[in-house]
Image (cartoon, rainbow, N blue to C red; front, side):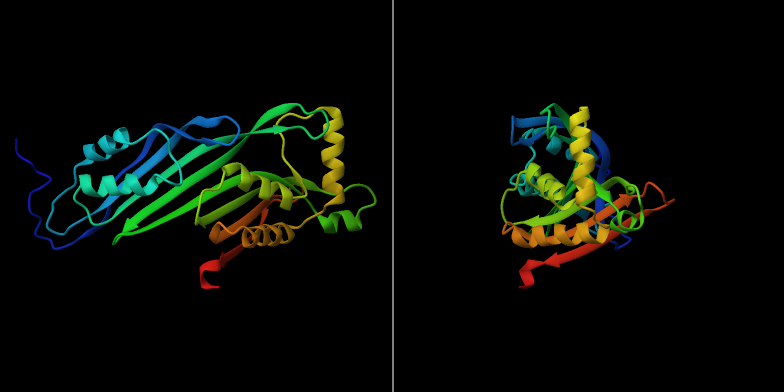
Length: 259
């Protein structure tokens, strides 16, 4: 049969990325408590295309995805890209996996267990034989406004927030470890199941630990600095304000590779 994709293209333009995206795929990721966790990832795969090739072979992306181990980790992303690059005769390869990940949390007083969703992204690239992987974990937290507490006779406004931790790593880190960092830097953690005694504990803890987004993101950056497996980080906190018609946010970027 005629191989149209391999026909010569004369426009003299290399394509930086060509591939497939928004394909849902079942994966298993390491779970600190149970070994592995089954989830569904939204996957994008792409490669570079030389200037003299008219098109790529889209079916080969799915074949590579199918042939890879079901287990998706920090360790095997480079192998996936090497396979992708070889299968499509490309110079560069890229992969993005977006997926929900569930943490089991025990309520602070009753011990009642519930599942809290976090969102994870693996953004990997292999360019000129240089591998790069940015892991992103987005975790829900709670913030309570120090200013509101200071000026109010009763209570203070508090709300859910999200901590986004983007990192480059030198070794394996459990996703649960990042969630714990976010919880420790917040006014209080978020739980899915709380009894009355737990609600009392959580609301009082938040009241005793008021934090602006600026406070939370600085504490999170310090936690990243203290973690030797983190080489580079971009941390951000967005507070979904309960009494304002906007979100508040703050961002810090740090690169420990530069000393």
